[in-house]
Image (cartoon, rainbow, N blue to C red; front, side):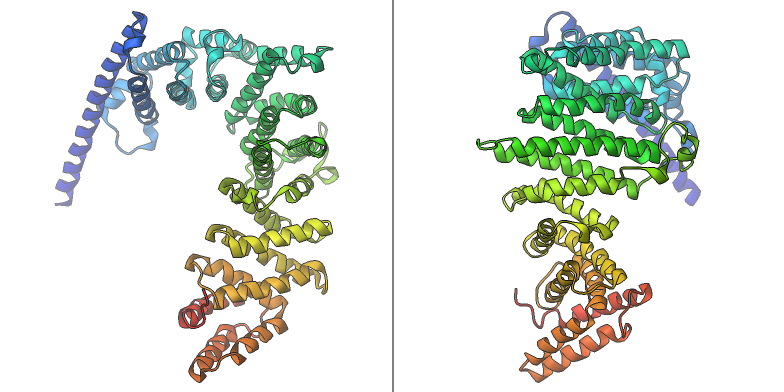
Length: 568
């Protein structure tokens, strides 16, 4: 019976594969009708939505079925493997056809943003996998496309900024396909060299400051910055070394542009975005020497931004929106830099191999903590309750301060007094007035802060006093207020570490609550529940086993007294 059932399933799978091939055939016929209509100058009779639907299907089909790695599957469709598997004429034909489809769409539909975007995403699909890219780069039309884009020739220069960014990503991914060294060198000379040369020729002009606001110059700068973002987005573990070196040559020049375009918010945002993408895509692969170079560049960027921001006047109606975009990007940059502390795919031996070429890690001058804390000095004074009404900005802000508290708790007491108070106010506001997701982030930030206080064993410090205040807030949240049950664990961990730090204050809170009860039954029920809660951790210490036992007892505690005292 099991064998028969397996055979039935196998037949069904093969039937589905045949349906897939028939469906592909139907879509290709429709696609060819569209292509012939455009060649006959009948574009006005066509629907961009139909073109979008065709590309949507072709991209997903190619990603799933074209040149499948048969080693990854126990079973594979023979018709599919025969038609579009490795070393088949069918695979070479359809890659060439899809490439021609991309080029035709970008020529005909350059003004249709959604269709153009889906088209370049199809191109990315063709080159993001090495087996497909190896076929793509053998096509003459691919080289023509690369030359046309690199020279800013029409109609590609009319594509939207986001489409041009993705097109550059695809061209860079294609450059890492299998080619002999001379061909590869020629390819990069045709794709990246013109970008670099045009940019340097422009910014090195003696009168660049005077012509920088001309529309043609601004368009060239924006196109270059979008291309840099696309190059960063193309980063993979096997190309990060080459791309990082190329991009680092641009970053210092980008910082110089911050001065020139200090009163052009859109350009400033795009400059910061280049750093955001480099950090996001590359930081996890960099060893300490290269990471330090990126930290230094980011720190310089933030210093220039801070200087310009202090002198920038924001009195117009778009001031709040500009501030929102700036802060969102800066916090994203800082969060990406922090991610290095817990996501690191770099070779730990790199520092030792490169000591002759770079600064040894032990003597490094800039760390992630330096950059992030400098960034916090910029962000905290600018964050207002009005800005926190933007959901994406609010989420990014609280993720950032939670990461900082978790990764660098020892740095928090070193903040200037006004910034420290601002941070503590933000945590309280997030716990008491924001969504449950934000509240949970704030609770997760409290535990490492309390543990830091316990390590220092210093009382009457600002952080020690602040954690005492948070003890009451967390206590009230768990005992007196209705709260999302998903936050119980985070709140419990925070409460436990705070109780370890402020045992006398916790006992006082319990006694005050019990003494306020007039009902003897409720009084006894509460007293028994509190006794059971701390029975396994008396006296409470920063011991993991005790914390686990406390959290188990807390679940029972919340279930027993959760409905007795809730005031809202």
